Length: 123
Image (cartoon, rainbow, N blue to C red; front, side, top):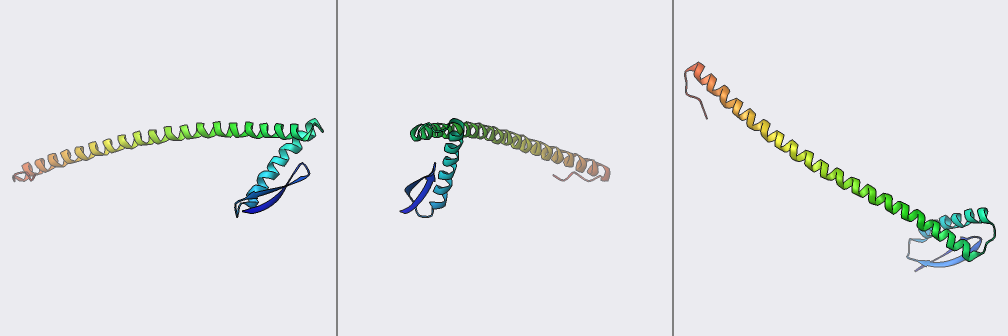
């Protein structure tokens, strides 16, 4: 396991993470530190524990909003997929109908050509 020291509210915290995840953990800690710093600017020195709890709640609120938006987008994507499948089915039916109509028209043209030439139609 790798070890990383992160700074949150000016305090160093040594943490373990999987190899190769050090940079990611540092980015997460920096983001959390921004939440804590924002709250500290708004409310002043209200205690480390309170700042941490408030920052955690803000992060969870943001995560909840992102999760809700993701679920909405996934639902929209599924509806679009179903719509596309319906359209493709209709296109396939239309193509089949056009092919049938062309086949019928070809037979009629061959029949007329045969009548004009005096030869029996070819099927």
